[in-house]
Length: 307
Image (tube, rainbow, N blue to C red; front, side, top):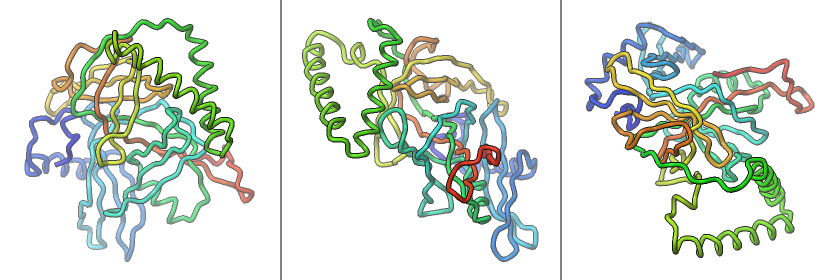
């Protein structure tokens, strides 16, 4: 059983036997079919079972030359249409099976973001064709098994000033990655000043009245993150099979925008635009690739949108 099935409205399913009819339906209905050539005459097939707008279960397997389909794996998914541009995006194959992790070195949060690629089959096809491609943007989503709603904090700084400081800080991070000692010293000094300020404020204030948003890896899985972010918009979706409600929240977190889904029954508090969501998410997403020309420059006219 996948740990995040309940996120998209399957909280009552407890065993693989209960899930089996849904996985078989995904294959039989052949919705959003993707087929690529495999080895020795077999083909790799991917199907999706939609359960609510922009979310469902994806099933990937191999069909042998005699027509028998063997399921390799499945996973719950949610699609997003808010892209994050990247100049330093890449994909790394998992050891256990031919699925991939996406890596964004230039993630706005200042960390290297690792996430589960939901369009691994398309990536396998591009690699089989030996195409020269590079990542252009990622469409990120997070699935949460639990979370809570926090009230917003009073914002004393002008939004434009905050945005300007954020851009300057990202520039410093990039310079520091390139070995710029002055940028490293500036970031170190900024962090020391911030620590001293927090040390003074924490005596009289609550932690979450000081910290507006957070984004950090947590646990042993490299694509699990603990986040605290502001709700920009939200929508409640109903699972057509179980009639459970799923809350789809567009989150702004550390200057990053992505969607987070959570089963309504697992959410503590009432979500609203302007309030904050705190929880642990499994980060996943589609990577969009573009073809490189012979000089290694991206040609937007030959964009291969993978979605």
